[in-house]
Figure (tube, rainbow, N blue to C red):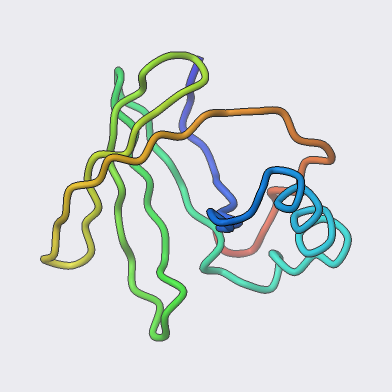
Length: 112
């Protein structure tokens, strides 16, 4: 099921799925834009039905932030908390996995 791993955050919440797919194909796959920007990378950790995501902000200087949530089933998780420094706020964001091809290359110099 779920395992710890690396994530590539492409943003784009206001785009349709078709627009998002094209954006990823152009900027992330073809032009390798994501290889030059450390803030689009993150790591996630799974423990039981909990997911924790660590990333850097896009703002300069890049500060770390953590999102936490629960795994609902094999294709869905819900982020319930966002924290950065000493600031914590509740969230209610649901994410659904879906297939995408081609998969961006996850090798990078930022995650060790």
